[in-house]
Length: 142
Image (tube, rainbow, N blue to C red; front, side):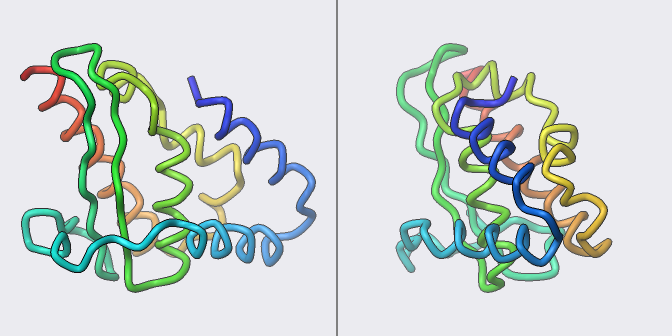
């Protein structure tokens, strides 16, 4: 249930032969994200469970189950900033209901990242996914 943009990323990763190329691509994606306003880097937007600093700010258009999900995010670690970019591509533009139906672990696994992320990074990625799902669920119930 990945977005067309995420499908393009998966296709790109199929062409990248080794982990170092994929790693560089993830970092470049993170560098391409617009910066998060410093005023939004507050405890309420901080994601707990990440080894590095991570902030996610939801941007939801509409109300109820058909509201459209989007978010901004930032991290102080380049690879995590890239993971935020991947999650942004995976989830942005879906309805808040669709966000809950995405199997993020499987989708990210298609990129081959699961085998190369440290346990701390994997836990941080899971924490970011959990936060996104929680934000979407709260918006769906509103």
